[in-house]
Image (cartoon, rainbow, N blue to C red):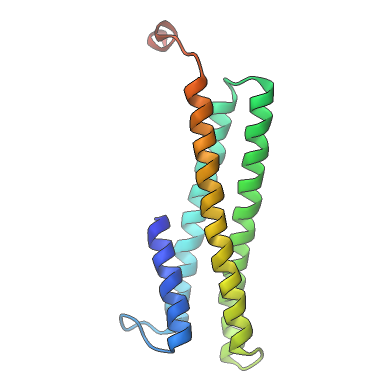
Length: 148
């Protein structure tokens, strides 16, 4: 889903620059589709990371647990900023269509949101790697596993 979202964001940005239809879809229609899929994907990803960290955190020591809590907070806050940013870009597209703001402003805001999206992907990846490393350090005996 992240790959599809990235491709859609790229296509929407390209379509805004080239001012052409892609696959028979106008720029506002492709923007709406992109925002819907983006919001769904990011919401799913944020929920998954939060739940995963919460489940791993229960078996860790206090120091490691607080580190994961901080990571979860960073991912969540940047994820919400990214969702709000891309949604705001879509809504400002309507202002561009009615000539209330220049298209250059809309494009620059999109570009900043696109860059932040890649930062968010990197952040999510590093938090998942950290979480998996903490999980690999857990010493779970086979007896405990087999009894449950």
